[in-house]
Image 1 (cartoon, rainbow, N blue to C red):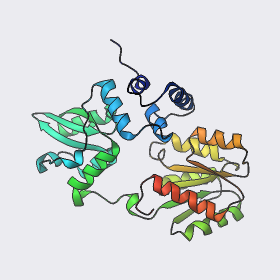
Image 2 (cartoon, helix red, strand yellow):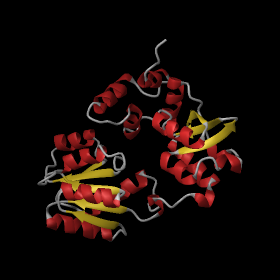
Image 3 (tube, helix red, strand yellow):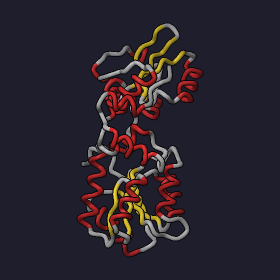
Image 4 (spheres, rainbow, N blue to C red):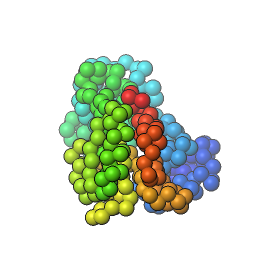
Length: 279
């Protein structure tokens, strides 16, 4: 019997309707993101809905509320804290030579293979939400977890070939305590994104050498940068332009000329959306 599709399971569980599924599938054609991620960004389903659907689709056990359970130190020591945090995995139980491992992405066969080879154990994946895994790591690994960007002030990269707009945006955001980096075109912005890995990028769309859309696509093609939130700001403020950019995957859109209060509000909204403690 063929495996049910992810969307079919969500429909069966009445978590989405046909119109929402078709809309998400249309967006997926212009994005490399998984269907679940697109639906989550559309505020239609939650992380837990995605985890449950994956559990049903592939027959993975569903690990829930990991943070509430107790784990022996010998089990925790199997996977280093840095590895757990970097890949969003958590060791649940060791049964002989089998390690039951909670994973935010249980379909990552390369990671499973690498861990199996490194640890000398068979990996039995269990699906869990990223939030559950992060909370469990923070509680059970305690002081072993290195500080993340969410523990520090946000770094923001501004990309614009217009010096006046660049300076105005910088002045507005420095007042809010953000660390600002500036680039004069998309090519320079991409290099600085690799160097600083900022929490947020705000980019003009119309620029020489590499425009904002090309920059965004380059970020999406880099696994180390694809999760960076990107806000587009441009003098082209027609509704169809805004729709195109948001549909492409930009987090937000701000029309020029820059209004400092609006810019500050949109950036703070991005901080809150990511759950940063600075908000």
